[in-house]
View 1 (cartoon, rainbow, N blue to C red):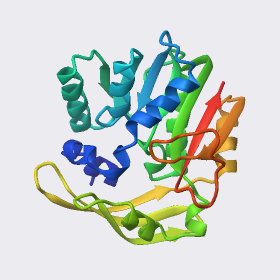
View 2: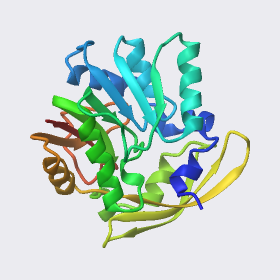
View 3: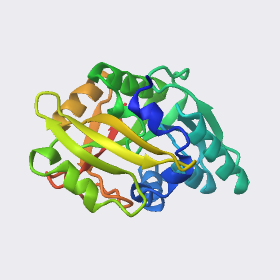
View 4: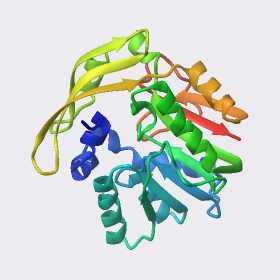
Length: 253
């Protein structure tokens, strides 16, 4: 049986593009540009690029970007969208735990939980961070978002997801948050691009800031900053709080 995150992303590309959490692309790319001082000579890798929304927007702005994803159907949609806009972007199918790149990129981005917190074990999640770090030159920077472990201590994940889900989007129910593992277990229901209804038993890892800091330090990152991640409005002005569902992580080697 396939892991839930593999089953989810099969024939889900067009549906994915209509999910409410994909609506912040422009503002998020504005932030990325500022973080790299609008330097178009830099090479960027988008890990867990999905249907290519960030890669395509950055390519439109003149950046050299490579998109990586595990799902061939997501990549097919990304290539189709890039072709429609006459953009030449390299989209490659790879497992983020085993990337073939070493010291090749100046910036790695992993946005909207494209892979990192979805794995079954902490060790597997760490492999994604390790491989992302390996792709980077020194100096190099990583920008990613991940689930904020402080949020479920004070709020219901199920209620939050229900309040931010538009009609026709994926729904989440029977959420239980395990305090021993910081994993949220839930049943996710989606209707895929072929009209098939899928019911998936999922679990996602939530991280607290000190865990992320320790993991990144162990991978050689020297500067690590963590903020609240607001959809389409990433900012270094937003201190992370218990109200933030996601955290924004910016680290430099």
